Amino acid sequence: MKIGICSDHAGLDYKTRIISYLLSKGYDVCNFGTDSPESCDYPDFAHALAAAVESGEVDCGIALCGTGNGMAMTLNKHKGVRAGLAWGTAIAGLCKRHNNANVLVMPARFISYQMCTRCIRAWLTTPFEGGRHQRRVEKI
Ligand code: RB5
Image 1 (cartoon, rainbow, N blue to C red):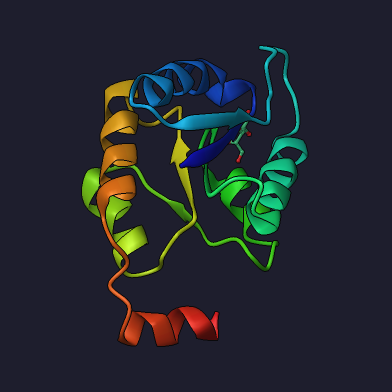
Image 2: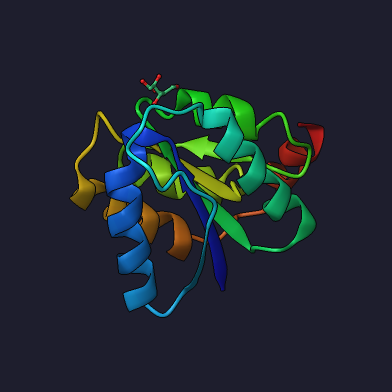
């Protein structure tokens, strides 16, 4: 599985560590930046990740900014993207189980790195339930 990842400056430290974590677990990772601690604009990186998800260049994505909201708002402008914001394992699993989120967004300034990896594990290992949730996802 190939996972795309992006952040702004607020999420850069976690993104760097998450890339190592994912590689150590055997995932392919495609990094869409930022790679600088300088202040930057999250849409520049969110749009790049979203385009890769939409085109199938990556199977799914992970995005981080300070609150997660800027990334989620930008990603969800893309028709082929369902970005879910998560700060705990239950909501991370549910954004896949109920919403079939193909991008997981996390608020780097509000959760620990350990919680990020736990959210990622929950999101990656939880299946989409389908059924009534499929109907609802189609209505998005
Ligand atoms: C950057 O200061 C911050 O605004 C950004 O990381 C994010 O929280 C925006 O939604």
